[in-house]
Length: 300
Image 1: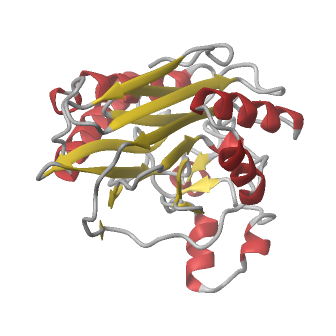
Image 2: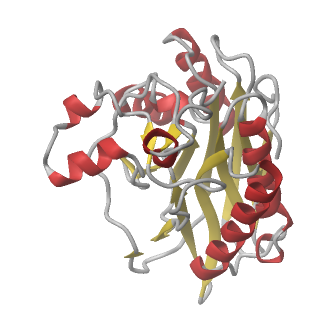
């Protein structure tokens, strides 16, 4: 669950009592410019999630680590248990938020994005969760798309039509998030429930990946590199070659032997754009409020 200094060499595999099977890979790297790796992740069936800490001076690492440890210790997310609901996950995230605030005095925070595998009436689903600007993508039936929607100021401006996707990529406030755990006022996550289709590939990442690689580059790697761990390694190396300006964490999960013709439910809209991120991610409260000066270091 805690970040590692370099990409792990191993990959995981999990299966349900039925023929439905998951295989997955994961890795993290502090990048070429950061002194610390403030990302944390958990990759253990049924939960696959990435937390990107904010705060600097190891505080961001504390926040992200506490977040994934809270997920890992939740009875609803115990190994092999695939019954979690969005309400149970939100309660778990509120516990993580409270723990982070107590430990850091609300001077550190973290984003979180990922999937929890759930089964309803014998059918498997991806329960996607997101708070902040880490991201969850899905490659399904040849189509690659971002499932999560960034909680960021530039995403709000794009959604309102005030700026274009191209303008968002270079906007001076593109690094400001509007929701996070451990700091700020908004701590509610968005959730999507997607039926798992045969051959689905899920990618969860911190913004150190999508800040360096465009959608087409990520799609090319995900659609051509067969093994999940090999895909993770290739994505991280590509991000480093593109500059490696931030910590980079990636999880890739594949679903095999799936039989599912269920519908789809969502609590938040699909995104239409992905923006480039070059600067430190900061909660909006730190930028607009009294914490601006003390929190200006962001992610180190």
